Image 1 (cartoon, one colour):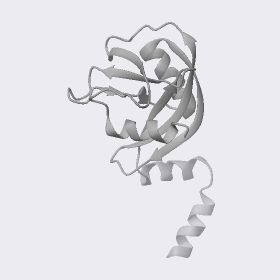
Image 2 (tube, helix red, strand yellow; image 1 turned 135 degrees about the vertical axis):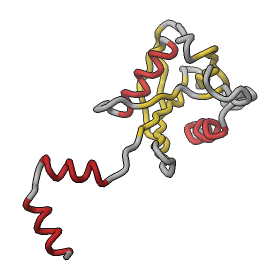
Image 3 (cartoon, helix red, strand yellow; image 1 turned 60 degrees about the horizontal axis):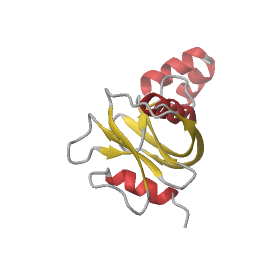
Image 4 (tube, helix red, strand yellow; image 1 turned 90 degrees about the horizontal axis):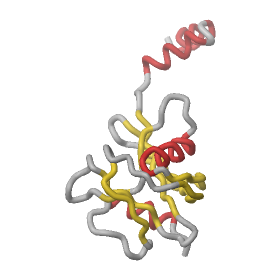
Length: 151
C-alpha cells in the first residue's frame, strides 16, 4: 500500500500535491511579537485595550498576513499601533503547541516616527527599563524581554 501511495504521489506533482497537503495538514495563524528597544535600551510596552484587565501591558504583537515575511509583520504592527518606525533584529523565539497559532518573537530597534496610538487597540504606550517593568505585564513577555536583554 505504501508503494502505491508513493507512486501516486510522484505522478500528481505540482499544484495537485499542494492541494492534497493543504487539506491534509493543520492551518495556523502566526502571531508575531516584537521586543522593541530604543537607543537607551528601554523596552516599548503597550497597554492593550482587549487584553485581560489584570494583564493589559505587553509587547507590540499582531498576526502575520498572507505572504508577509515575519520580520515585516512586527514593522507593520508597531507602525499601525504606535506610529513608530522599527528595524527588526534577531529571532528570539518560535513557540508552537497552541491549537491554532504559532508565536514568533523578534528583537526590534526603534528608529523614529511620531507616537500616535491606535486608540481602538492601544490605551497607552511607554518606554520601560528592563529592570523596572510595570505590574500587569504578560509573563510570556517578561520572558521574551529577559531573553533579549544583553547581559
